Image 1 (tube, rainbow over the protein chains, first blue to last red):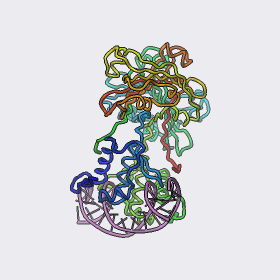
Image 2: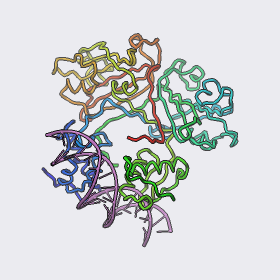
Image 3: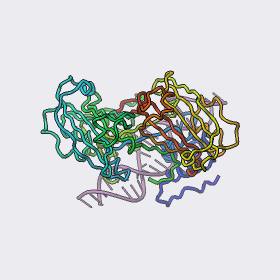
Image 4: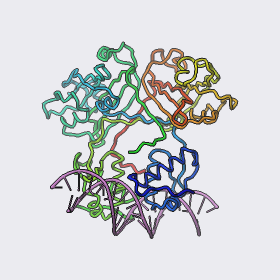
Length: 250
Length: 250
DNA sequence: TAGTGGTCTAGACCACGGT
DNA sequence: CCGTGGTCTAGACCACTAC
């Protein structure tokens, strides 16, 4: 019923209009979780759209997690995933600006060191081999937010780093100072306690909780070219995830 | 050059084959970050594919973040986002099974309590008003992994919960015992220290680091219908994010 | 066997960016 | 102005599901 819907003169393309219509019907309860939507062919007939256009619309809804398609069966309204969460971490400077904070960095150390057992193991080099190391203290609104320690395979190449440590991210620094470029990464996030030597830099009491973000950079999916971590102050840093019925245009 | 590429007899659809080809050219350095790809029309000509098929392929690469399209200008190779991360948290049971662990739950408490100041504030109800509360200890491979405490507005309706606490997630429990259904959620993750009364349940020393996952459930994007949190053992739980040049079929 | 979604084609018009 | 990506069309064949 009521198929007098798509406005062909609107700036909003038809596939998006249909997505809004279907989203509304889902949110209003006309289509309930578990229900099947009309077939792509029927939707095209009802709204005078070609099947490809209907499919583009359904892709939008599927990406938002509102529906899911099953070959041979149909397209079904999903249960909203309220017990799932997606946390994204941006490159530090962008992440802080996204939060409305002013980022800054203070160089604590940068030099060539001999790999400890742990560093050697992570970087896949022999213990005592020379590796490049830097440490910087990251601020947000002039207050310590995180401590960053990074290690990379030593490549006699370029002189060494300098004040680019003021704004560049790890992968950019490696790219600028290494022949072997990183092409993939792996990050882990865990809760832990601040190390004694980090507490004073971060201006938190010893034993404070911190969020540890470990980062591996790989070249061609094989060798490790960089390893290190961020230590975020637990009292200042948290991650947010929202699942909301969106109206937003994009 | 070398346009003898797409295998029309393969089970892998042409758009995906082309995505693999282009991905390879990007990873091998034939196309470098910042370079523009051939136009969609030219790619179609080179590989004997229609433009829609080429576009589907480019969408795949764009979703992975390998390229980005700019109307009127072209499609460009992106810098890999190696300093970003995406952490996903699934509903507890699924999350554990995804990790190859066996989930289990032990009910610690379930009853009607009077809201403390904090609970009242979070749930947007008056202090001392009655709210429904449950607490369960979550296991993975028979060892404590997390503690869950959840609160919801009290709805005299259904009797009360029972052994559904063995397997149901918070939003499902609310849906089963409340007139007002949750339709959106908000989750926060932060590092903190285990509370003394939680340490023994989790079988960790007092003062241990924990990952706290706070959850709000909203109805119709307005009122809070549920609030609570998970306390994950810092020594057993971490989140992983990978950015890899994928070959994987899906 | 009939209906579904997944893929593909060979056209088309548009708004946009750079010339 | 021309080339770019964004959108749309009206067909088509396939694999899969359910009956």
